[in-house]
Image 1: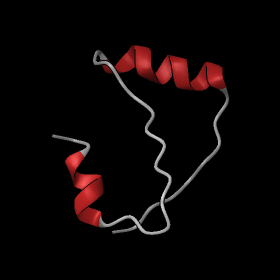
Image 2: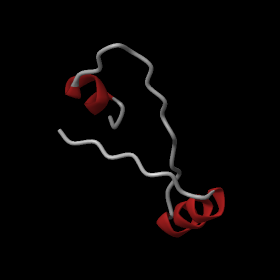
Image 3: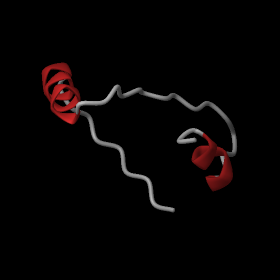
Image 4: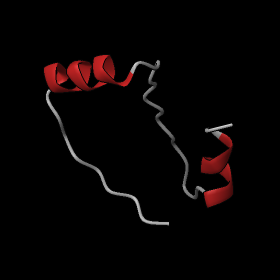
Length: 44
């Protein structure tokens, strides 16, 4: 798994969400170790 982080302006995020037609969520994970399995559970 590869993860990439990019900062975007709030206005750009809101525009992107509006174009998707679905609700979107921002998830913050705090842990010393996070497995791919744990991340995959978020999308179920």
